[in-house]
Length: 473
Image (cartoon, rainbow, N blue to C red; front, side, top):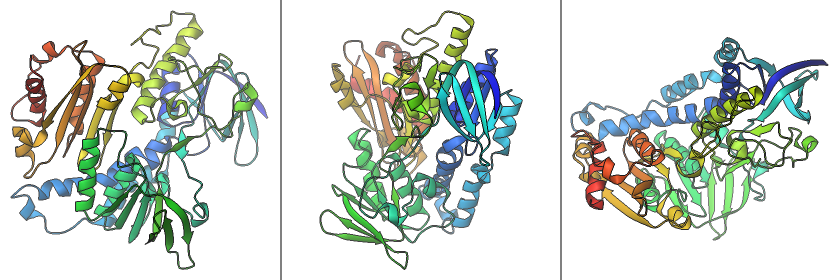
């Protein structure tokens, strides 16, 4: 057992933990980061990067087939082996040498092993060989351990060895038949990916497809999935699961029907990775989400404990976690140096955007890009709103982009302030429209000023002008 002391200790070396440690070191403090798996975390190896690599090839093929001239040049279907190989490359073949080298170049000390809080500002690291090291922090311990797939208590499910998001992202072969339990982002993206790779996909949804986005977006994705040959069953629940001796998975539904597949993916939500990190030693409940204030300091913690990323449940998205990481790293530095803390709304040391300006892209067919509040969420927040919709296919840039373009855009306006509080667009290749909406919402740009932000013609961005015209001056 060796005692080592740093200014800050970070549990978890995913994108969030890496960014916290980087900001701390750039602020003149020392930092150690503890990781029991691969440096780079979920996003690098089992989520953002490999899943988008799986989806990109089929999206490019669909785009080519939607254009006369390009369509005629397409002579075959996807090369599945090439798609999987490209996916593997984007996951660095599940090796973290490059990420480890970056930590070293950034001046961040890596401790491999399982980290557990053992007292105030103290972390015990246990390596695979059983050896332990005790780390002490002068100023803060930051929990950035992320989340894992939630498995419901369905009889027989665990015994059937279901896929989670990790398995779907890293699978070496494509099953002939795949059932997906759930209708959220992971469920719809993986249904899109595996259908394009040749699997016969069945999606089993209790509460509807993509229920957290505007309803029209979920409806467009549902239609597209069905057109791609995916069976989408809504309003159903799985009662039991059994994998037989031949490997076939049998799912019994609450309406009495049965579904037989080769693999079943469970994608119904996430659970925090806090079950065995020593929370009980500082008076907190193991396995719980960590409640934080706007500077990411744990409420009811010991004052030196922070939580960033998925574990605080504010916004379970990599880019929001990295945004939180920048704020928490900087505020730890400020407090360590006795500097002023800028914790007012939109201040440097807070994550205000988590409240009402969270951007997200769902890489389905069609893509969905959304930021801020849905119309329902804005009404629930007590805002007096006006909803403005426009057919994206009626925009000149969309017609040029692809024949038969289908899509829709919506802006949600706070009528009392005449600013946009929500924006959703669904259609082919709309992801890059999102940042303009994010800036408009975060900057609280008045609609009268947005009239002077002239979109270039002929681009899909012209939808902004059409939405403003529909709203009126």
